Length: 569
Image 1: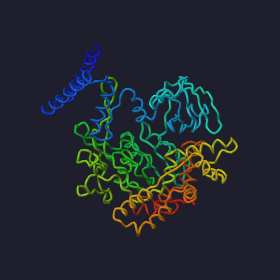
Image 2: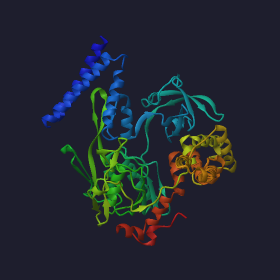
Image 3: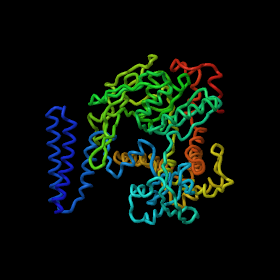
Image 4: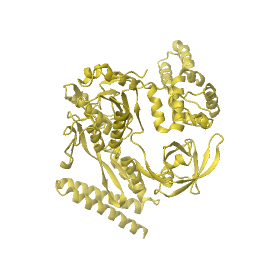
């Protein structure tokens, strides 16, 4: 009976897939239709055979999930299947909204830990803090082997419903029971906007979710009308993209109505589209600099690439990620969904910035290769400047990403910065709330950091030591031990990880990172962004662009000294 039930279920699933495919493929070539139906039947027969004959009792859902994931791995990483249990994740990616408590949790050392609290939402109002460990939800212990998704599902729920949490607060805070009323949470696309100096505004856009263009427009008008902004820095660093329509609307804020912003081309005629500016611009004459880095992707590249193509902004920073693909979400059987790549997009000059060729030859590890340099074409901006396809967006002015030491990388990876910032924040009372701009960690706190790390047993390796070990092996192989052994041992002694030495050597960057984490505890994401801007070389370089250099780079913008404004110094 169990086998027959599975057969009926499997056949129903496959027939539903075949029926859907027939409807979609009616106008396609008969050969294509036959190949797909043939392989669907093969899949069905293998699926049934495994369930009927395999020595153990397989789990149908797990088998199908593995099969689907393996199939999609042959395409690009942006084509993703979402089972019913993950539909809420997909909705959050598109809208930035969910029903919950307004906190970000993740496992640290095997325990569910609050790593960020969103300002103005129930978690903050209930007094929850980063570093708090959630040990039970509605009486269910999290030591019962719950997965991360299960914990997230327990915290989420309808707005107005209540959830009971048992919290352990580290560093002497004890255990407490907290009741939190869930609410509709919307994570802001613009976590911070403000003035860098008397005339220069700054907007940080973290994602392209529904309504993000409206957030940018609101911030833009506030800075211009209330703060006296005469020029703007738009920061897209770390922004992995989102909704195409929002990117079009954001470009429209700065370019005239009717301007072509981006076009898409796909296998289906339905995706051969041109997107133009449909509204009146909000800031058509505002001098503009856009910041990008290697994590700026997709919609971020539409905005920065088109503003570059139109000679409307100077692009500052590092070369962007290079994602020129467009996805659409399709409903599948049993309330599942498929996010599938349907087209490539082309910026205003006609270039596609897609870096990796997922349909081409793969490397030895099965990874997609970048498009060959010999196949790349050069396009021109509105003013005749050359821009290249297939390599992301290349900045007009390059600024190297600040160096991060290996010891700081390891401190972040092991959450030691996070934990120590929690400890420092726990020692500050309501009269010691740090100012987001001027806060400096006390000498006593910094001195105790080494003691804390030693007590925690923190240890780390470096790439230098790995390379040295490879060199030692080659020296032995070539029998140069007699002449090289002593120099190599001396070099080993110099490069061997030494926590006290490395904390002294890289004190400035480690201190800054710790201080930002402490500020996050009291002033949330906006405060941390505001603080980071005071020590940001890319922002400093952007400020220097306004005026004559902007005119030289793109032939656009004001050049008088009054418009360029004073520097931050």
